[in-house]
Structure formats: C-alpha cells, structure tokens
Amino acid sequence: MTDLRGQIGHHYEAQIDEDARLRSGIGRLELERVREIVRRSLPAAPARVLDVGGATGVHAEWLLADGHEVHLVDLLPSHVARARERLGGAAGFSAEVADARALPVADASYDVVLLLGPLYHLQEAPDRAAAWRETVRAVRPGGAVIGMAISRFASVFDGLAWGSLFDPEFRSIVEADLATGRHENPERDPRWFTTAYFQRPDELAAEAAAAGLEGVEVLGVEGIAGWMRHLGPRMDDDAGRETLLWSARAVESEPSVLGLSPHLLAVGRRPVG
Image (tube, rainbow, N blue to C red; front, side, top):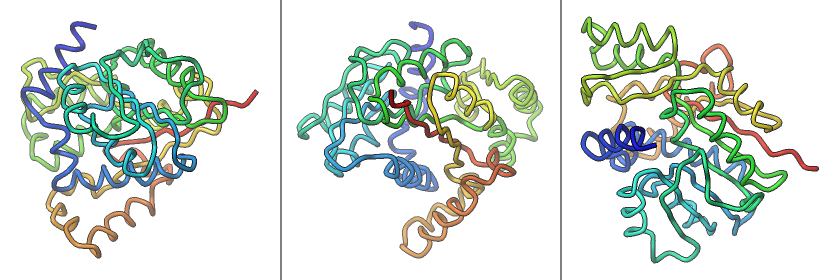
C-alpha cells in the first residue's frame, strides 16, 4: 500500500489538483454527468452513501446538499484532511483514511457505494476484484454500487487532443496501454498521468458482475466532448452546458462508441436474498 500511496500522492499532491480539475473547463462536464448518473440510483434522501476514494469531497459536497449522509474514505491523508476542512461542519458527513481493498465498515451498512477513483489506480486484477468485493459487502441488498474506470483508449484520444501522440516516447506508452491496459509513466511527466489501469467497457462490466452485482450497465460519462477542451467555456452558459450534457446522454449506452468516452461508469445492484 505504501508504494501505491506514494504514486497516487505524487500525482495528486505534486502535479494536479483533482478538485480544481473537476470544477473548471471541460472537467465540469465529467462532474455534472457523474452527478446525474449517480442520482438515478439514489433512493430518497436521506440515504447513507459510502464514497470510496472520495478525494477532497467534490462528490460528497453535492450529495450532502441533496440531503444524504456521506462517509468518505480515501487512501491519501491529505485528501481526507481537505475534505474534513471543507465539509466537516456539515451534518451527516464523516471521513477517514482507508484502502478500498479493505474498507473499515460493517456489512450491508450503506444504501449506495461509490467507487469513483480506486479502480484505475489498481493495475492488478486481484486488487480491483478486492475493491469491488468490498463495495458489494458494504452495500445493503438491493443497493447500488457505481464504479468508475478510464477507457482503454484514453491515451490515444488524449494524445491527439494535446499533440502528445506525435512524441515517440508517449507513443510507446500508448502502444503498451492498448496492448495491456497498464499505463506507465516512469519519468512522472505531469502531462502523461500516473501509473494506472485503463479498461475496456466489457472488462469493466465483467469485473462488476464477478463481484456479485446484478443488472450491470456500463455508461460513457462525457462522450467525445470530454476530449474537446476548447468547449470548456460552453459550460458557462445554460444553453451550451445543456447541449454538451445532451451529447453525452445521447450516446451513453451505445456499445459502438462507449470506449470513446474518457470515463466509464459501471452501475449494478447487490442481489436481494
């Protein structure tokens, strides 16, 4: 865990502020789409939500505003500290440092469990399976589990959008991504993400089902607009924002283009009985 914490910490503490990314530019499309998809699976407030890998609380914030109770866990102490600083005074909020593969919560103690970050930081299949199993253990029968992955093809599209694909060094990283799903950035170049695992839509669905979830559906979060950073200002006005959201909704479950979306969400439920 120490090595994983070090890798993730270097990326999120030294290179990128994930909270700021989701609140600015085209990153707001990801935030709003995750919010609307998660809301479809939430029971009436107040529901008990476990936010696994919840970082500094960007999703916990709107969940609390909706009237839900949120317990946030994250591997990085600095993330938990920031979440407590911002949300600690809110009724129904709590947070602690924990590993997604060994959650310090009771069985069947939450109505919904979110797994919106850990999966793509776990390169090994047994580790991802452990994280999925823990979420299923933690959710009540009939409750929803929602897990996020990065598309297997993300580095291809990101490389085209930023021009990095024309760099031979990055091209070699992309070729490995496509072949194995394992994304490596040994030089820790901040332009090229961190150690990660990128998934095909069918692989994500299979992992969720193998953990015991039923009715698993995989949805594209942003669609192609997620790669079009020049569209970020369109999120500033109602009409532009709605058009971008509509474009993502229109193809969210179309199998032929799922992998085009930067992020994927798998939604399933723990069986009843």
